[in-house]
Length: 78
Image (cartoon, rainbow, N blue to C red; front, side, top):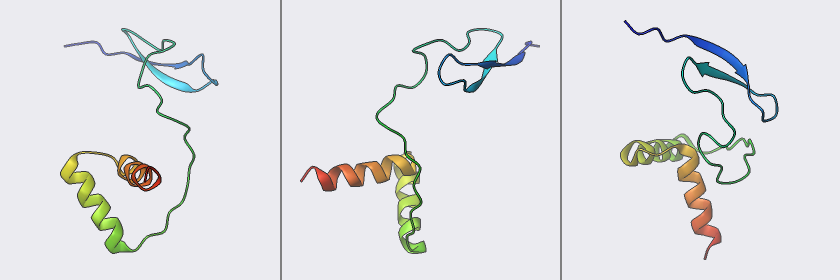
């Protein structure tokens, strides 16, 4: 059986906590690359519209954020 020990470590970036496995660890430049600035928003839509978005996410295996980002980028690129 594998010995998968988990440690909690502090990243060099903004003091964020992260999980450190027995191999590898938090490294500067590792992980998913940023595509922009993250801002938290609250969005009110009808249940029908949320269902359409969720169906699109499921059908295309993408996140809600990606769907909404694609819609906004399409609208503003016209």
